[in-house]
Image (cartoon, rainbow, N blue to C red; front, top):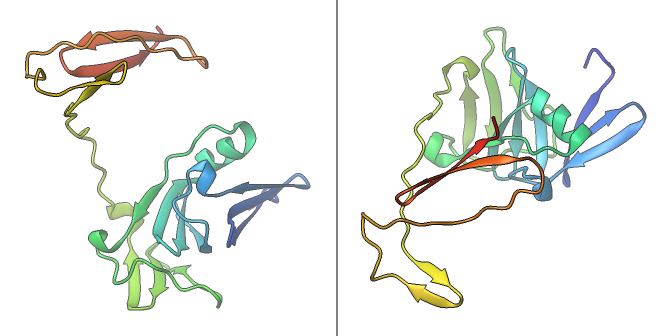
Length: 178
C-alpha cells in the first residue's frame, strides 16, 4: 500500500503489518477461511482473496477499521453456487491470482480458472423473511400456539450503544438510538 501497510495471506488468516505491528484477522474475527492464498485489490477499494473455502470479498476500509478497533467487517464468500469451478483456490505457488488491464480478477482453482468482474457483482438488498418456528420460555417449548397473528414482547440489552426498540407482530427490529 502507498502508506507502507502490508497485507499478507497466511494459513492463519489475513495479516496486516502497519506501524511496526501485526494484526491477524481469521475465523474468530469473521473471515470465512483461515487459509488465504492471494489478495488482489480492485479499483473500488476492495480486496478479493483466494482461500481454501472460496473467493472472499471485503472492503479494505472495513479491514483497517477492524484491525484498529475490533469492529466486525462484512465478508462476502463466493463459492460453486456463484459459478466457481471449484470452491478451493490454489495456494503454494505465486501468483495465485491477478488483475488484468480491464479490471477483471483471475484466480486459479483445481478445476480451472475463475474470473471476476468487480463492477458486475450484484448486491442482494432484500432482507430474507424471518419465520419463528418455536419459542422456548423457561425451558418450555411453544410451537402449536404460533400463528400469523402472534405478538412477541421482548427486551433487548445492548451494552455497547443505546438502542431504540420497535415491536411488531413476529418481526423484531432494532434501530440505532436517534
